[in-house]
Image (spheres, rainbow over the protein chains, first blue to last red):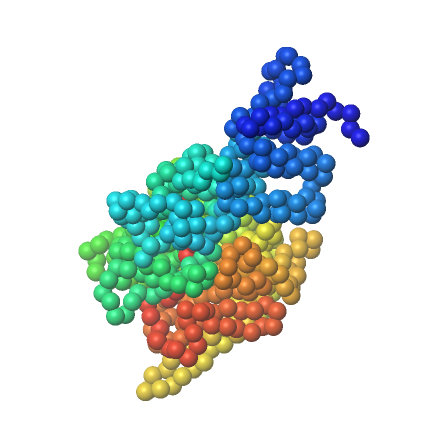
Length: 149
Length: 397
């Protein structure tokens, strides 16, 4: 339907994805790469993002290009982030690397929502983070004793 | 093929972004306690947090002789303890604004204290009010000399000044760091409003706002003051001299106390109705105050007039000795919309001979019912304790 130019993106696993330019330039990083790249018809390498995650990012960008701000888009976003913690982590990294602000906000908000109401210990368990040293614990307690009583 | 990701190794700027999506102070503090990288990525003093749900600062513990003070959190249904030697027994609070308590003592000093950070900021002392002509520490019992509006002189003791000079003091914003805050004090005896701004060394009267002394709020750069009939004096104290304009609404009849609340983009009038019970027991007359009702009005500038509101929808109001506050209940667990959370709000010198429970609770606008605050259940009378509870917004900055 659209007559926009098509861009080819190459994941870290060397798999290629063809997308419309309008979708690709939702990523400020890709936009800059297109503007800088004087040679035509080469695919754009995205070495830091796997195929699985790149496919998800493309799905996000496509939907956001096609759909105006609406309940439908909100609903899409809510479902989009229903992924496991590992995928969420990868999406945050990818959204940052590709400079897609709305996706970064969405994924970071999701991470924040996950930890709301959790104690420090619960957060560590949830994300498999090792405990702080006794010195660090002591400093936490000292700074905000009321929260750790 | 999948490698386990390490959330502690997220780049600091991304951890920081996540931390800025947390809106509750406790969540933010816990975030910083997870591990070194998380702590490093989020500043000790967050600047993005919206206004928090107030805590109820509880009276001093009767049994323990300690500086620890309890703060009840509605959200967590729990009491948090802060170590506050600065609010010792002989000190009185006459306000709670943007998370700072206003502390008075048996000295002329007036200072602001943030209970969370224990930061202190001094305001000009009591001896620097326009109607205070002198202060002599050695004139025991008559340390302050004051002048009435018609030129007479009288004296006040340290205690009397502490307890009855200032009714309430409110701030335009938190006085942290370099912010240029303004303060307005409501004087009890004469109904005067006095103000000072950051860096000034004395208080000045807002002459044309005298008698608008029921309540004052800061709203859009100006101070709105209300009198007992609901009329408003709008005070602009940003310039060399104060400028006052008036919103003359039809006289509100009835009601014992008035509050103003800044509610989204509107000004609300909250009228509190009290009933007095007289209890004669053991040859002593006790007066017991009890709130029976609240009415809420929104200001319609076409008129102007106050229009009664039958519902606040999702909003909750917090009134009492604190600077009146309106928040959205859905932003905070443990809080129900369409309610007024209120505390005791009488000049403390009325407390001699007053018994019964503290007059505090939760008023439901929809059906006019009153519920006890969870930390003060009904029928568990533990005696009126000093000082009465007050709402304080936990504010890390």
